[in-house]
Image 1: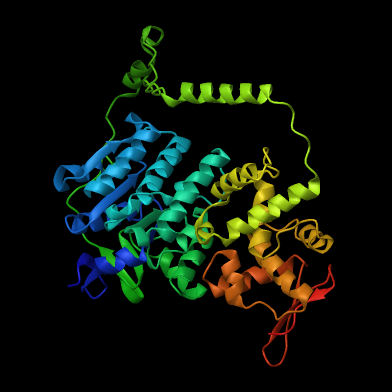
Image 2 (image 1 turned 90 degrees about the vertical axis):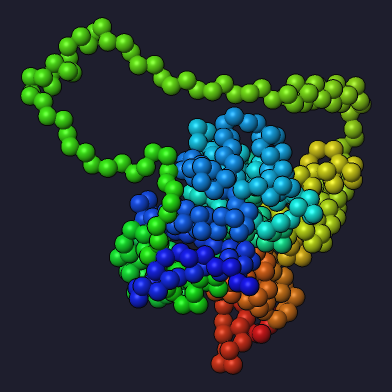
Length: 485
């Protein structure tokens, strides 16, 4: 039996239903500028599906805690718990199939990202016997999966982005159906947005956001103007759980609302000019200075002293040991190549972030007798991209020249470039769009073609297509060229 959620009406006043079972398998992306009705849409979806599926909401502003009053959700105030406690709570949520609202209100941006990362990772890492289906709603997703670093520490950004990527890319097999909402598509990481198969696009005015929304909806750019003309509460829906063609839907009413509600216009107070001056200036010097609101004191982490003691013990042990003899650079390079090859051969490594794989790399190097990591994180990221293209050793002069030629390319484009370079050096057939897309970490062939166009615009490659439609790629700086294919 199909379980559907009534979301509202189409232009012909016919009900528009969202297939809940299909949504669990294909995920949902909601986009709309502030005031477009995005939170209203999420509330409609949560209210109409309450009781039919477990719901987990990551709420940066504390808007959805009112669901607890009518639908029995458990509200968790993240500011009152440590990261360890948040992770333990996530495990119990999956075990007991509880619907909850994780309110991040009161935390700074980096604190919200840390908390969300710990929470989502714990949901993802739950025991296999607890992999029950659940909707995981993340509001303001551009905060947790940003395209750029912003003002938060890099390790916080990477941890949050990795957790969001796991939710959208690999969560389905573990019963987690990601529903992400964002004000700006341009600020949301593309690899997170691209994993959604269902879209509800609301009103937006910036050209770059309209273009991305039209691209996701399969519309021509000249049709994107209708996104700007949408009314508040109107969305264009597309996807296997909504509609096979873009469909305009007016979201229906809801039974709950945010705690504060939407500010309304009220009449200004009537006062004579002299009364206004008296209200402002009389007794000003004796008026009390308003105190800033108290900030909750951070709870001390019991593990801090333990970690400090452990670090001191390890350092003392190192001081007592004789200095290790320096290893030969060629020997260290052999260890790096062997470790990279082992990581690439691990099937699970494809879905893990570079920062997590770097920890694995450091441990494997220590097991091989190299105590200090021979590469920093940026260097490891580039070598990992090369390894995924089948290039493990950097001492080869030819590959050194290829890496030098690609020095200005973004890290995520190095793998596709080296895949082409490998075929060009060997005179092998040109890699297909599917192979290039796989090395880039996407399933979109259009994105693979745009990637090649970008690399060609940097004068690194030259693409030729013969009359038979076969493509070949040359690398002028190295004098290599692939065979036509």
